[in-house]
Image 1 (cartoon, helix red, strand yellow):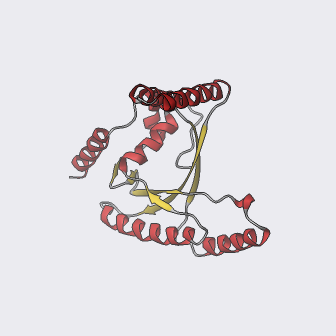
Image 2 (cartoon, one colour):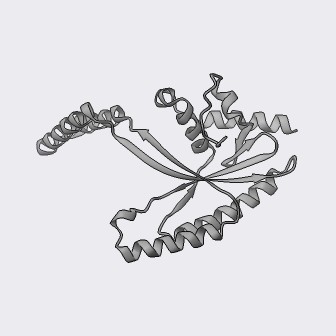
Image 3 (tube, helix red, strand yellow):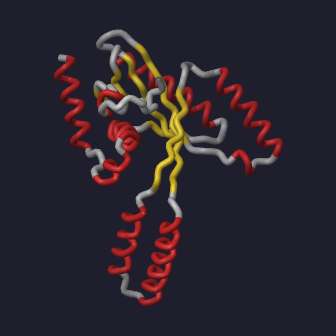
Amino acid sequence: MSLLTKSRTKVSARQQINIRGVRDGILLLPHNRYRLVLEVSSVNFELKSEAEQDALIDTYESFLNSLPCPLQILIRIRELDMDKYLADLKGRLAAENETVYQEQIKRYSAFVQRLVANNKILSRRFYVVLPYNGAADAFEEAKEHLKLNADLVGKGLMRLGMHTRRLDSLEVLDLFHSFYNPVQAKRQPISDRVVQLLNSSYIRRES
């Protein structure tokens, strides 16, 4: 089963995900498996000329042939929380003293409200998941191996005009949290405290 694929069986999210913990941005999975997640920028292929498209396809083929390890590509589409955005606009309106800018904010806020009334505003993000399967107590080895592979994959994607960024521990957990509990994730985003608790629990189990 894919790392982030939902199961049809009605069990808890904790049972479905089965994460041992997260440390230094690396997922700790059962059976000494580790995962590192890269966020990747996109390229608008359709806006390229035919020659540019051909060059991209050739470069992508070379990238696939040079991969240092298997990888998983994840495309995450989420509905943006426009309530917070509108609340921010309201705060800016209250703090603005110039009449002309107040009117601009009011008109823009009204436009956004009309837009979201009948349309969902979506964001699309792209991720690459890199694996490492090691022996028991092999976190440092896994960390170095994943860092090396992340650098190689990042350089390969850069040749395609894409940029990569490693997710930290909080961002990795937030990705899972929003995937399995999208409504709750809006109301109760994951905090640094959760990461600290997970890490301390992991260290106690390993000691």
